[in-house]
Amino acid sequence: MNTKTTPIDADEPWMRELHADTGYLLYRLGLRSGQLFNSCLQESGLRLRHYAVLRYLATCEGALQRELSARLGYDPSAIVGLVDDLEKAGFAERRPSPDDRRSRIVVLAEAGRAFLRDTDEAGLKVTNELLEPLDAGERKTLHALLLRIAQDGL
Image 1 (tube, helix red, strand yellow):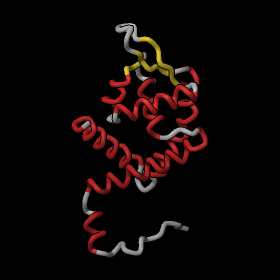
Image 2 (tube, helix red, strand yellow):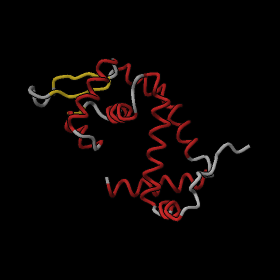
Image 3 (cartoon, rainbow, N blue to C red):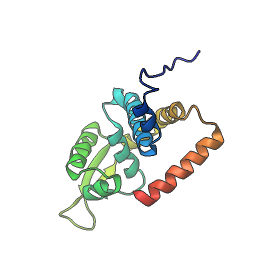
Image 4 (cartoon, rainbow, N blue to C red):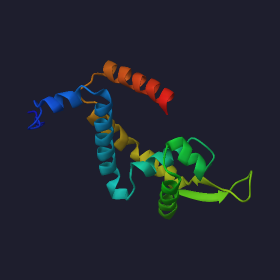
């Protein structure tokens, strides 16, 4: 049984025009993805933005906060709060930079690595729910196209 419902105004001309706009559809999909992922993270007290910082830190030996801001596209003031939250949770820590004693780098703590391992399944669940209408080949094609766009535009 299909539990999905058709929006009341699905046949309205303005709705059809929005659904013809790829940018709008990507925006809506991004919102839905964020909502689903934040729901999975709710128990931990973290949000998708925290998760993104942890995922980035897992790829390096540490990063300056300004690097996190530039790489993830977050406002520098938002990074400060996100890193504060991650430090309080024991998932990341600030350490003196080996290159500049006046600067501090953010590094992933072991508890942060464990958290990422524990959330891998939740991330896969969200992706599978979002992409449920697509078969494996379509998912692979969509991923390749999105990756190409992201590499050019981000």
